[in-house]
Length: 491
Image 1 (tube, one colour):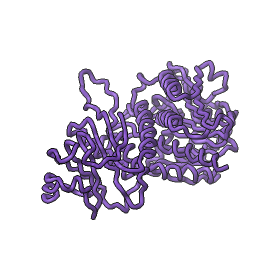
Image 2 (cartoon, rainbow, N blue to C red):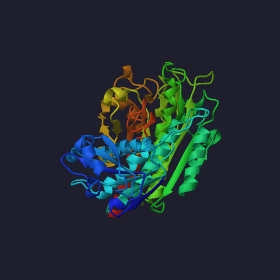
Image 3 (cartoon, rainbow, N blue to C red):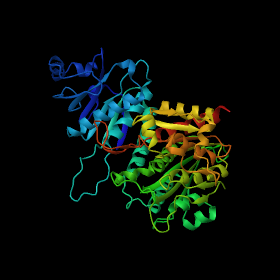
Image 4 (cartoon, rainbow, N blue to C red):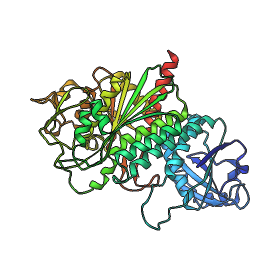
């Protein structure tokens, strides 16, 4: 989609549909308010300022735009980047449903939200709401795409550009995550990483099974034992600070399909396990945005890619294995495979000299019970670094929460025969156990683990987005990188 800005009066902005906003107690822009059709709709209470409500009226030549869509924003004092983003997506979907191919949106002037931030949020929302997933249905026609978006307002250019880069990156992560396991093998995921690298100027190294063996990635290879698809270990480097460091390391779980292995999952809804590589999708999207925004920081991205299958060669509960960190692991469940894949990635990033680490994964079902389908969990070995990541998520308009990491949680996954087990006693504190397992392979390097399992996938469509991958964590990772870059510039 072509996204531009315009500063001319609203009555001169050309579009199929012009989206304008209305908050409680406010009035519409004068160019819109004087339209007879709008006045009539207001008189008949067909236009509402309630949050997320939309109404479309024809301009009948009163504006350059053919129609006006009035979007209710509710109480203006409650607006933030997240609510603005969602409202914009709702409006864009309603406009598309009316047949619009060319949209314009008047960025609201708000007392406590800067114009650039409002423009960023609404750009992200429109592109998110309009995103369509690939279908494999023969002969099915998708809803025609909106081709252009014009944002109208002053001092909005920088926000639009940031929002565009992040929205495109989020949709990249969503599109990759949506693909079925037979269409997105580890090799295909590696090819997509190479394509992003070529497009954005990133260095990309991909290690096949032999390369993984030479690197000593024993835990990734353990998970891969039952598969006919060879693993890939993907390393992406962005040298925004010239490669002189310090380095931010981001590690994504790339399990392209998860059966649970020998500890096989129930068959109900197992088809959704194609989304078990949402962490990898988030990392891939974030690296695209970081490069396209030209952030002045050095970032190393690592993705361990494999599927997790049951087979005569598959690893078994009770096995003891080790990986790049050298730590031994007792396997208590082959369905706790993601932390094994992340552990090798984290150990690699640490050895490459990363100063701060983030891992992101659909790691545990326990996060649903802990936080519900609202927030993702944060687990860390360093409180100060966790505060940075939490603040970045807040700035990005993504909801996270910090979970405790007392030493007693580590005791829950001690093993009598290995350095640690990959599952805790009795399934207690599953989010903390999974996250802290990963932190142990970071040694002394500060690491924050993001468990996005409960929020990475929508099982049903809603007024804002289609059913499927949400692209969560991309925006947070980009904000972390931006804060990391700003910190270096202040030093």
